[in-house]
Amino acid sequence: MTERILTGDRITGKLHLGHYVGSLKNRVELQHHYETYLLLADVQALTTHFENPVLIKENLHNVALDYLAVGMNPDKATIFIQSLIPEIAELATYFSMFVTVNSLRHNPTIKAEAVERGFQDMYYGFLGYPVSQAADITFCKATLVPVGEDQVPHIEQTRRIVRRFNQLYKPVLVEPRALVGEVPRLVGLDGNNKMSKSLGNAIHLDSSAEEVREKIKKATTDPARIHKTDIGNPEICPVYAYHQAFREEGSDEIYESCKKGQIGCAECKQKITHAINDLLEPMRERRIVYQNNPQRVNEILMSGTEKARLAAKETMQEVREAMSMNYF
Ligand code: ATP
Ligand code: MG
Image 1 (spheres, protein in one colour):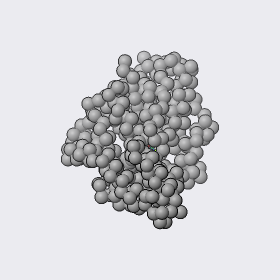
Image 2: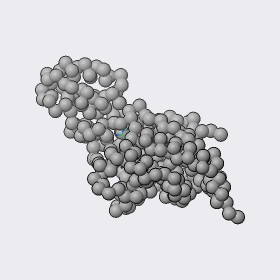
Image 3: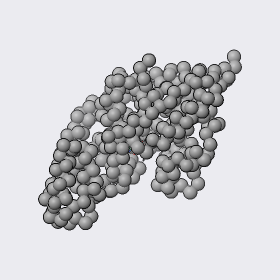
Image 4: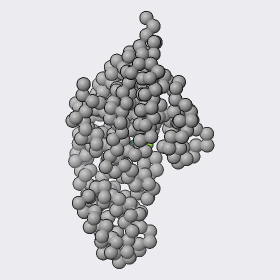
């Protein structure tokens, strides 16, 4: 059997350059070598957006368009909607019987996100989302999960859950491994250490050339650097991080000339603006085709969901049998 990939995104907003370098780029390449399952995580989005489910609905097509625009091929990848696979919720419930609350509370990503979102007391669904994510990954027996760095603790937790399940019942589930992209964590335009949908510090993949130019123009740089001849600190400059991520060939030269005060921030920003627009241009062209045909996008989502459901039913039969829950 061809090995499977499971990966996906919370439907909390349009995708951005951080998603691209952290995970999407890998997914586009790997879809040719793995059977790829691509999850539109509406349930996981609810863990932080339960008060605003309309936002999730509004973003469903946006994220699907992002996938198609970056080059995910719907004939190769199975793009599906999490909440329409009830077996995922069932599997997560079974897992939750043997996952301890402390193991979730000590998960470093859960801790960091809880602080970021100002949670005093943690919601049950939020605390348990790594368990639900373990079900997302294991229902289709994925072996590889392309993700950004923040997701690594969750994959570790999934591996522990699989081992425990297989040991308690029967070895029917498979342990996945994480594949972190070239840039594990892309910095935000404001200098925050993560470009994020929820922090308003992102360049979205559907940005026009003009929007990219405007955003880069306003991006934070080394605050101590006022004149072109001032010696710069590229290490702390988000714009330099973008050079490293998107202009690999030219980034050493930028580093040197910034350090020597030979290049001004305006020129440096101009170069990266061009590089980002060159990357986004083919995506814009692919996006427009699907944007003009929303019915085709719906068909892709419906047939992907149908296919994922079949895989889920197959796995759940084995799971229930392993747990002696095959009653009749
Ligand atoms: P939210 O703020 O709603 O949680 P997000 O921007 O963190 O949104 P997710 O949908 O949670 O996006 O993450 C989807 C995938 O993209 C994950 O694998 C995550 O690690 C990766 N990712 C997100 N932001 C970045 C980033 N700035 N750099 C690298 N990878 C990222
Ligand atoms: Mg996130």
